[in-house]
Image 1 (cartoon, one colour):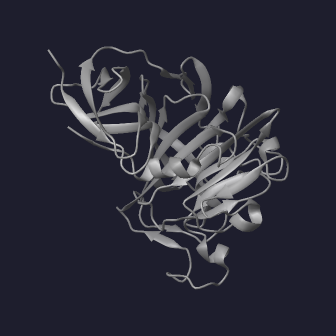
Image 2: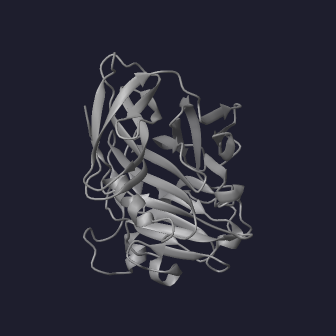
Image 3: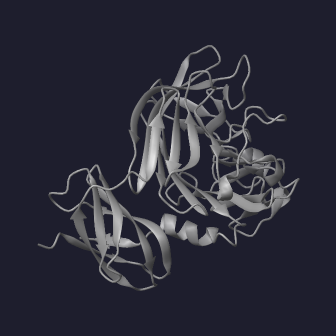
Length: 368
C-alpha cells in the first residue's frame, strides 16, 4: 500500500542539496522516515519533529515540480549529538564537525572547534589579540549599559539555565537552549532562547540554522549603539584572516574591511587557506530579521559579526531612520533573529553563497 505523498516546486532556480520542510502527513509521528523521490526512485532519509517533516532534496531543476512518497522506517542518526554534561559533540556521518561548549566556566555558550573541508579548523577561540572572540557565538556589547561582549572582572555573562533539547537524527541534529544574560555583578538583564539546527550535508558544505529570541523577562532592555557586537559572531582561524591568506566578501561586492566594515549587506563571507585547503564560513541574515539588512562588524584580523544596534557608530552621523542605532525592548516583549551559517570549500563564489542565501530566504515550496 502506497504511503502519503507531497510535492515540491523548485521555483525559478536550480536547487542542489536543499533542506525542505513540509507539514508531516496525518498519522506520521515524531520519528525517522524515508521519502521516495518520484523521479529517481531514491529513498532519502527524512525526519519528523514537532509535526514537521524535513528532508534534503538531491536536486531540483528550475520550474520543476517533483512528488515524494513518505514511508515510515527507522533511519540511522547521521547527525549524532553526544552530551557529556558540559559540552555537546556533533558528528555528521561519523566525522567530527563541532562541539557546543555550555559550561558556566565560559562567559557564554559557543561552538569550538568548527571543522571545514579535510577536517581543518575554520575558526579559533581566545585569540591573543581578542580573547573574548569565541569561534561561533552570540554576544552584544551594551545591554542595559552592561558589557556582554568582553571577558573581564566587570563583564556580563550569558549563562545556560535550561538545555531544552538535544536531538540526533538522519537529516539534522538540534540543540535548543535557554540562557540568562547577566551584568557584571550577576544581575539578570534578559533571557534568550536559541535553537541551533545542524544539517546532514556533505563535508564540503556544512549548514547550521540559528533562531535567536531575545526576551525582556526582567523588565525593559536597552541595547546601546556600539560596534562591539554582533548578534551572530564568528572569529576565523589565524591563517584565514584577511591580513593573512583570507578575503572578506559581502553580498554587494564589498571586499575586505575597507569595503565591508559597518556596511549593510544580506550576507558576509570570510575565506582563506588552512595549510593547502581553501575554506570559508559565511553568515546569512534573513529578510525577516529586525532592521534587515544588518550592519557588519567585520575586520581584517578575523572577526565577523552581525550588528543591528551599532548603526550610529558605523554610519558616523549619516542620515539614520531612527536617529541612532539604540533599541529599547519593552518588558514582556521579544525580538527574533534568524541566521544561517555556511561552512564551505573555496571562496564565496566557489561556494555560491549568493545561491545559498536564496535557498535560505526563499526555499522550494512543498505542499501535501
